[in-house]
Image (cartoon, rainbow, N blue to C red):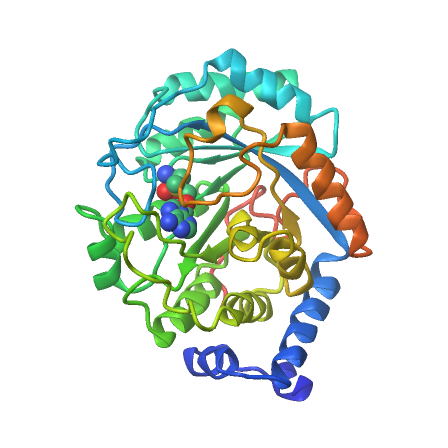
Length: 354
Ligand code: SAM
């Protein structure tokens, strides 16, 4: 098994073959993912604090709880001072990156968000990741000038037809072109996908993993699709509802195919496996933890999916439990910003041969 992986061919067929492994071989797959993570990324787990600064969204992604068409959501946008206050607290703990995430509408405006990035860079030692969707290249360039270090934008699915069905009025090509702009501008770039979207085949899942490799990403975030009752997919089931091990197999294969990427243990793993999903993810390829730092009063209004963990916890509690969980696994909390190990912040990296 390990020998097979050592001489792995990075193809869709190989990814698909690995995804279909069953017990007891699957334990070797997890072991190899963990070894790959340790050899390339070390035992440090970097903690990135996320601030969900606005749930206003102009899009109608069929799966998303904060889609424009969901009239049950109470909409909010944090003020610049509220964002700065939440970010300042992070720097006193172990969180040296702030992730600014929102729905896809310029709730603050490009210049206002640029000003916030500048203030965070001036007033705190934090690295800044932005995740606010498809934007023009000039906006990305402007935010980079303001000090933005990284950008996170999932492609969600590598299948163009499925992408179009899930994102009315938007194409996979447009999203990939945003990712290309970001990489070209020298921004550390993250992307990823959901696992088990209705209509997703095993072949598409394998393609998703391969696309991450082809894009040569600095960060890759994946997580199970969780149906939200107030969306058009509310009645649907995750493709792997009866085979939830697939969520971890996908993560393990993702790590083996992308040894040098930062990969978070995303919150959705805890939603599906309460209290232990992110721990298992950290043992099967992940090396990043992202506690919620959104001010407590807004959290219940940023429900991308139901039963999102941490909604009632304070930022302190989220951080505290992250540190405890990381140390309980025998891992260490990463110091410093935990930038890409590919050097994308210095110069755009050439595409990796597959
Ligand atoms: N608007 C930005 C964007 O799309 O990149 C950032 C916010 S968006 C809500 C963040 C991510 O939430 C999406 O990339 C998507 O993968 C995830 N998400 C949304 N609805 C979800 C669901 N029902 N289950 C699991 N993940 C979901």
